[in-house]
Length: 172
Image (cartoon, rainbow, N blue to C red; front, side, top):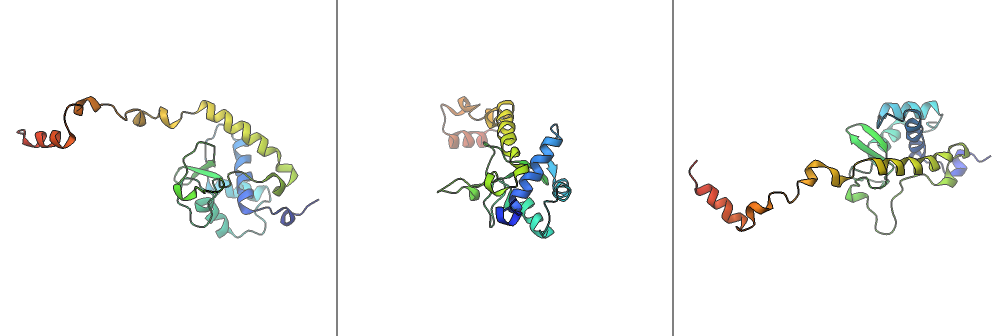
């Protein structure tokens, strides 16, 4: 049996696993706060040998796809609202600083680098993310995004600057 160090079991992979386990345990819950993820790490024994400051940095910065990258460019978590995280899914918004030209940034653990008992989570994740992708609204379904272009007929025959000048000249 490989030791965790021999596998190259990273903090990022441990946090991803803890979050995936929470999603499985609480399927109706969309997000988890950092404390819930920390507790799951401890319950699973995944926090051994890791300083809490390092876990905090990973939960607030290194792994979160939609925040500016500092050192790591991973996209393993997504912050729905401040402090509320879930697993990153294909199609989620990614901060431009996390986009790498040569290869996609890491969003799931490498199967060879995690303990055998957690490898089933990778199959679960693939099905989970595909199911949610089919059932969730895309950005195109956002009511504000759908407003793009509405009202363009108002300025169809008049340049925007002329329209503004005309409004300024009209008595209040």
